[in-house]
Each structure stands twice: as C-alpha cells, then as structure tokens.
Length: 170
Image 1 (tube, helix red, strand yellow):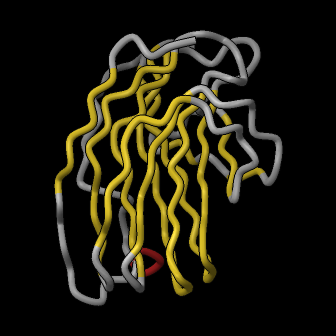
Image 2: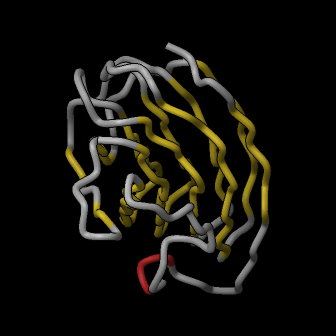
Image 3: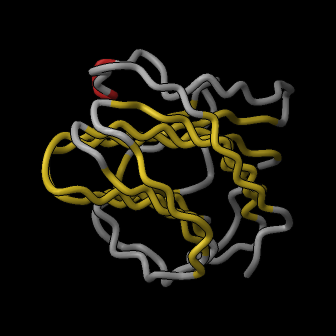
C-alpha cells in the first residue's frame, strides 16, 4: 500500500483575498490527454477550524489514479498537511467530477474520517492566500486504504480545498 512515486513540490501562487469558492478552476495543473485518460477534480469549501479532503481508490477497479495538484485557500493563516494510506474514509462523500465526460474510478470525502496514515509533509500558509501544491502521487492498488488526504487547520474562517488529477485505464 505505497505510492509508486511521490514527490511534493510547492508552487506558491499567492493572491490577496482570493476565495477558492469563487475560482473557476481547481488549479493550473494540466493532465495528459488521450483516449484512456480520465481527468478529474473534487473540491470543498467551508467555514470552520479544520477540513480534510481524501481521495481514495475503490476496493476493486478504478484504473491507476494520479493525484496531480491540490489548491488550498485560507482566510487566516493556516497549516496544510498531506498524508497517505490511512484507514479508509467512509464519511462524508464528495462528488468527483470527470472533466472529459468519463466517470472517474475513485471516491472523495470531505471532513474525512480517514485514519492518519503516513504523514508526508506539512507547511504553514499565509492569511488571505491561495496556494497550489504540485503533487505527484500514484494510487495503484485496489484498496480503500490506498488514499491521499489533505488536512487544513486554522483558528477559524473560510477554507477551500481542491484536488485535481487523472486516471489511466478503466
């Protein structure tokens, strides 16, 4: 239950007072194209002190999933953390949107109850900012515990999280 490769690089795109909920796209990441590629994204916005968004493989099927980038916006200064392969999330479901008319073979969860898994990285993020984190994570094994979670914590305020990637194969 590990990623074939994982590299997290930070690409900071700071926009003063940018609200993720008003953004027309999840991030500037561009997935490959082809007849066997299903591009996807999921997003969630709320007001509170924390949010977690998990994307995970189903127990069977779903092709190979590539988590490509995560965009986080915070009203106040916040901390953004990434983890992998926690106990499967089961509440509360988010919609995973296919960007090229195909149905993606993965699930997504908001304020997710996914187990902690392996901590990968954690960064502070400034107030009134949106930051895109370039993620190269590959989810290959068919298991609901093969997942990728973004957790955002702050004192209180508006939080937005968007995750974008693609699927290769059925």
